[in-house]
Length: 112
View 1 (cartoon, rainbow, N blue to C red):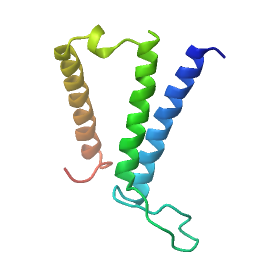
View 2 (tube, helix red, strand yellow; view 1 turned 90 degrees about the vertical axis):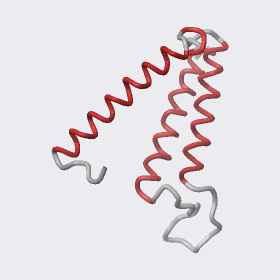
View 3 (cartoon, one colour; view 1 turned 120 degrees about the vertical axis):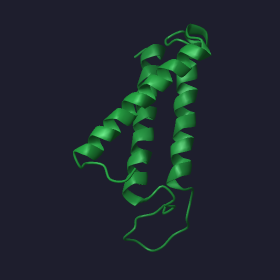
View 4 (cartoon, one colour; view 1 turned 30 degrees about the horizontal axis):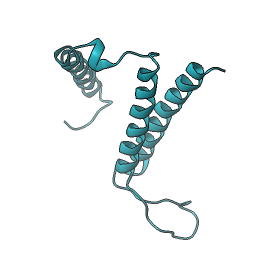
C-alpha cells in the first residue's frame, strides 16, 4: 500500500465513522451521552452523539485536506468557485427534500 492508498483508506474509514455515529444518534438520540455498556453498571457520561458526529466530521475534513495537499483530490475552493459549490449544494438539498417528500407520501417518513 502506498501513501495515496493509505489516505484513501483513511478517508473511507472516516466516512464510516461519521455513519456509525449518525446511526447511534438515530438509535439512542442525538443528545444521548452514555459511554458504557447499557447492561453494565452506570458509568460516567461523555460527549453527546451530536458532539461525536461533529468530531468525526472534523476528522473527515482533516483527511480530505491531506488528500488535497497531496493532489489526490481537488481542493473545492480552487477547483470550483464558492458560487458553484453553493449551487451544487443547493441542488443536492433540493434532491434530498424531494426524496423526503416522496418518503412522506409513501408513509416511510413521518412529520415535517
